[in-house]
Image 1 (cartoon, rainbow, N blue to C red):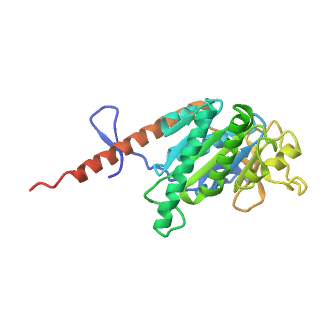
Image 2 (cartoon, rainbow, N blue to C red):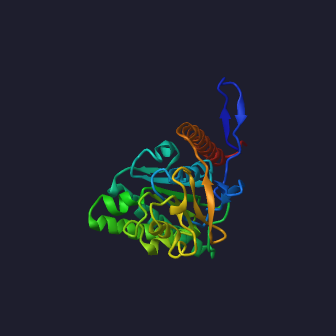
Length: 292
């Protein structure tokens, strides 16, 4: 049964608008020719870097919005500033603010979940998640990697965070775990090159220097003429994206203002709550024996 919403007058029942799917390509913005750019994220991860105001939060919020509107995806959010992803809190299974201990607990939980899902796939003689699977995809969105990997906590906690995140990025794709991580301080101290190279998709908003651009996109792109440092500071939201074609391409990220984010988040929360209620009712009805 499809989810339904009750109209404001309390008497009519209206069908819920069509939900998205995490298996659908995600709208990122427009390319240099003004054409819409949609990127598949299932079985992929994305690293987003750039200076403040370069479009990182816009892209990350667009990805989270798509996932929030996808009933086949769960949200796990890490936000060192609390406000960048805070509007999506009611849509998320877990929201962690500036707390390294809670962040480590979440990553460990996801690691255990990942191992159990691989046990299931092995038992079923399968290799990866498919649409309509018995388990749903998960988006782990992190705003400000630097806060958890290099700013707060002890040295041991920072190292543990990096090791756990690397494991999730390396092994999570096949079981539907998507990692979207953003940082405004792209440096080798924040983003280990081994971790960076595990991200299939990368977006570099304007960077303060060529070195920072290469840290996000990968070593050698500046030498080939691709540097996010060349993007005008008066062109917020513009950046270089490495996605399906394997080479950088110019992108203008879609922008969601606070009011739009709040509206989408509220609708997504209602969508998810309604769908959960419908599933619960369906389970109860299936458990009731038929009348004689």
